[in-house]
Amino acid sequence: MLVTGADGTIGSATCERLTSLGARVTGLSLPREGAPHVSAERVLYGDARDDEMVQAALEEVELVVHLAAIPSPELADWTTVFSTNVVSTFTVLAHAGELGIRRAVIASSINAYGGPFNSHDVRPAYYPLDEQLPADLDDPYSLSKYTDERTAEMAARHWGIDIIALRFPMTAERGVLLEHAERAAQHPVDGVNEGWSYLDSRDAARAIELSLLSGSRGAHAVFVAADDTTVPFPTEDLLDRHAPGVPRLRSFLGREVPIDLTRARTLLGFRAEHHLMPAPQSG
Image (tube, rainbow, N blue to C red; front, side, top):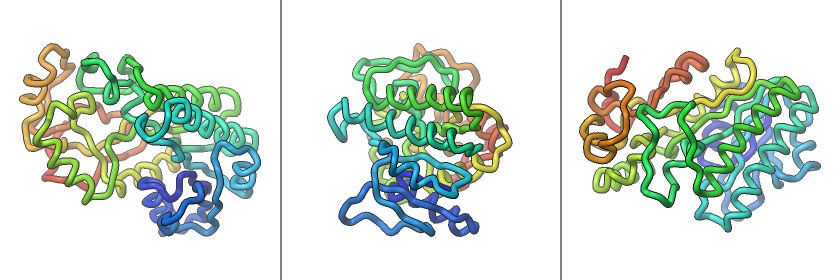
């Protein structure tokens, strides 16, 4: 199988997990100094926007995991952020579809609905966040992830390739998440549009594995996150304080993350295993 963005946080964890399970992994990454070791049978260095490079990377591949992206509107100029993300996704899925590859997983983001990077003082239309949440797009990264999900729908329609677009929240190794959680506890309002959500990179890799094994047909966006929040406060209290006017479609127990994870459970059989604090009990 092919994993693009193989030396990134999620990519590295994914390559390590899939290789440990016996998969023959081809990793594709941009060439850069100090890049971490990639656990893969074959490692290629190039751009996922490049047709010839992607075609070479897809040789003898049966499954695709596309993670390559610029993961923030602050890491490059806006044209580069948007064009890099959407062109790489289109290039990988189009060539995979042309080759008759039957299943792919792509990295979408919680930002596909537009809230977290929004320059306006906005709130989600409702809690829990779910895959039908109306979009309010205000930056090129969020727009690129929204577009990537539309690209997946087009590829599924045209080539019949089944695609899971995983809407990742803040995803990192445990040490980075603990630092993030400490900052979030001091300024909880900063996490309101993300529902104070997070995911350990090991759980991200397992969600990708389960997506590859899923029998779902067509293209689906799926939120994945830990069951609990990053902050040591009851979720209902957080919403009362920081999103008082936002409708709640249900109540939340303890530190339960205000994201609807039903689709992750039913389509993938996924539940996060790695928590920053004891996980809440949820229905």
